[in-house]
Image 1 (tube, rainbow, N blue to C red):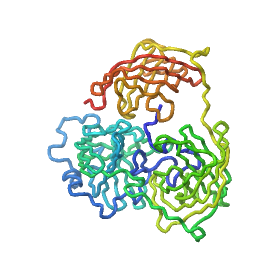
Image 2: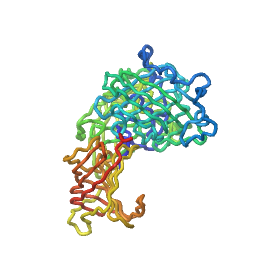
Image 3: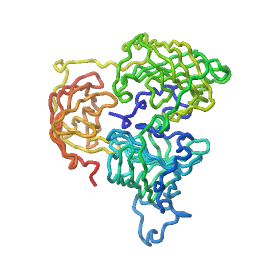
Length: 560
């Protein structure tokens, strides 16, 4: 119902045939960016700058890395006759053991319940292995001192994630490992400017690749390598997240007319989308260069009305110029980029330019028909390397100037949902819960509540997914149906079996409230009431629930 990634741009960025970065279709490495995930490419800028040496004591403690030969310490060997339990580390699963950190750094979001990331490098220069400990508090990850398990081996769903990326001398990732077992012990979580003190033990990692369809889902490599870490310590000062790590890129206008500065842009095709998230996305593609089959692509992404990207979304007004003033893709609101020498079949491009100056004015936008017109003026772009959201300006790189460019086409629009009144004929009303199940879903960081209409088959299932950081008794929480819903409600029909194999109409709630009658986050006792819920079926039918109560107990994430 909601992607576990509650993070800017991942949910709204079009994966059109031409919308890809220099190295990957719809994934990427976000490095020190706050809420985003990805691990496709490591840029040299990822490494802590010379002189940013780890403070005394920040390096891996003596004994963290297994000594020469990674031999098992005396007494650690399995006794004769002792069988290894499933999941135990063995020589067969540990092709490599230990991580010798040459440098380490840590970042966190300033607000409580946000994201914290730790990076450790085996060398200050490429090639190196980079260890990433990523804690996504908004998705159920660690936000305080305590003991946590590193047992979700899927990067798309983990909330406490541990990866190792092996990068070659060019910065390309040649191998990726993700933890499927291990323990994280945090002794001090720390605010920005304070220390993050923690240790990882008993880590077992498997080699994985990333699913090309989303760039986030990890797939174990058949007969892939294993990586183990017996123990490793962290004691690091926490820096605030920056757009491109601790130092965002500084834009300097190109000199229009210089030999290495291109000008103008002639689009043969324009595709776009008026997203239901509020984002406006356009992809302009040139004709193929004769004999090469390569094209240039302009991507225009406008996020001023997108919740989760800006704190206060505001709709774009017609005939009003909006500034394009941020070259950094991690933080830009009105983003313009040009990719050159693109092979659409291979999904690769040779270079990329991001705009740091200019204006865009929308002159027509019909959210029903999708008709869209805008004018880009005074755009100035500089050559960059783009690793996911991480932008680095190429030293002595090229530039691009566009005096004026018309952007127009018929864009995709969100599907229109027919409205109805709860009193209309054919609209079902009411719901009775005979049995309630509850579970805290660690990989998604939410509480799942299922209310069965009957204890026998077939039955209907009222399903709630609760993503708020905390649910307080006496408080009411709104139900929404957007991609980033924090309180998601659905109703599936004609279900059989404990797993809910449902073949009937699926209804999604578009409005309503959830009243928390009772909640104990320590014991997992939860009683709630769904109020004034309006649900729309995938067949256009309707269902209204004025009030229904559900209660039960789930195992909270802090429970042993």
